[in-house]
Figure 1 (cartoon, helix red, strand yellow):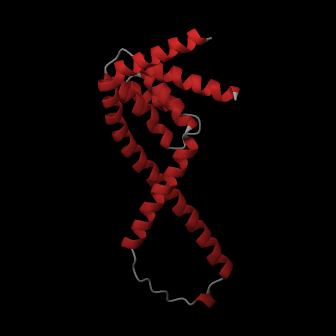
Figure 2: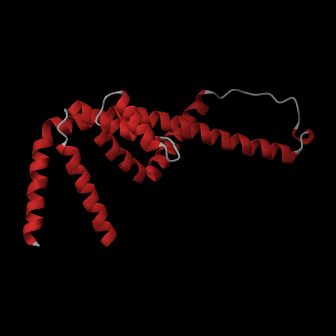
Length: 177
């Protein structure tokens, strides 16, 4: 229970920090989406550095990038699953499109069955890797684009109202203690 309360407090603090950034909505939105972009790929610990590097390169807000990179690290299992699902949908569409009648001149009896099983297993792993990569690319592009416009909309229209609401809740919480 204590851990959940700490996590909730950390999320509120980071949201408050994100809303308080004095930079324009464009820079904050760029920082947020570029910070989250590497989270779609298995970067093996280099995601935060990549987030900051990409954000500096396109002149986004670094704090927003760090916050979203942290969020993406927590959400990695969900993102991993989404990559496989989207890549699997792509793979199924590709299979329906690429159906060709292949003619085998060699009969099944002529080929060692163990060899066929090994080749089939390697092909399955290869296909999974390709589907994951395709899912990562599609998800990163799609969610970066949608995320940018959503963050821009929220910051332009609701930034001051959200800050005011959070300040009131924070003041009410402190006075009850």
